[in-house]
Length: 280
Picture 1 (cartoon, rainbow, N blue to C red):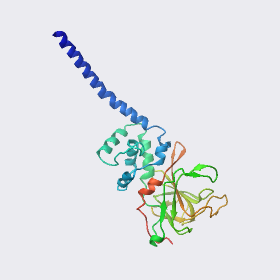
Picture 2: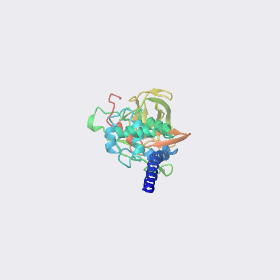
Picture 3: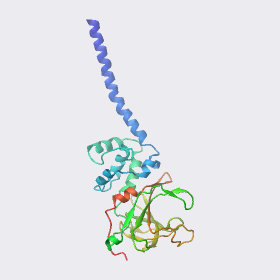
Picture 4: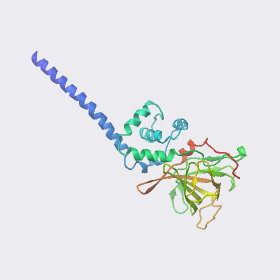
């Protein structure tokens, strides 16, 4: 009887130790897995650069001002939109607390905020002429382009309903500083604006500029110029190589390297935020 009691005690102790160490190591393994998912190269990954947001998540996201932190958690938990995960709620709050302990969280969070937290307006102003002057856009991220050599399309093209240069006003999506202005062979007459959180917003193929210079501070919704068809030529002023449209690009810089991200989800986020006014 004593031997049986001794065995029961030993088995109980072994069971206790097994449960105890399991309780310690499983969270550590989960934390280690999270750290590996938040790798040093995450900002260069296809998942991050595509910025995928599900339709359901976008509907909730539009109700959130400065959604960078929300998206940072959403993308890690949803494997960059491949799996379902709520945008808001207790589950999201708990996930945020876990991820903030992981190495690299700060840099990753800053990148998400740079792309999303300065967004205010859709880049084409609303027309006073109503249905005649409208625009459309689709997700053309990394579609093939051949001018100047085979490459992927690092942006989103906003197409007008009327193929006329100088008709559609282009406005700044964010506050920022005009960092670059002038002719580029691919982009034609373009503007580059550095937003407060650090992202570079690129507007290309303009027909003309507003009274704006490099170094100027612009406010979100401020007129930058008008949509055109300039570009695809080494000679400044080349036109007519493609239909009138606005090319929008968003870029980050990490460790001295340029990172292009897909502007399409950001444009969906501000699609209903169109500034109106007389820009003629």
